[in-house]
Length: 89
Image (cartoon, rainbow, N blue to C red):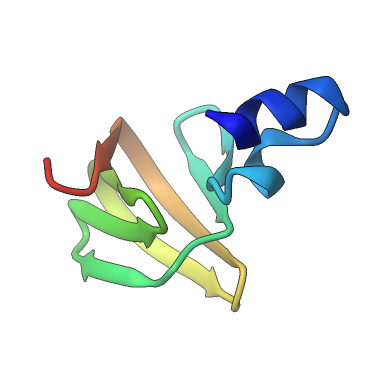
């Protein structure tokens, strides 16, 4: 992929060039997702967040969306699993 090669060649952050989400996890208690495209599904046991190429699925217990901003979502609770699904999967 040309964009991936250019990011590597010019030492640019891949998440910016490839329009990927950036996730920051604090143990299994908090996940911050940047570069998202909105919440698809939300319950205390499952949160699905859209991004350009697919979805991020968080499963756990007592999940709460703490903040939603245009480019960032923070989810707290006990995260048991985190899964990336590409479009079409």
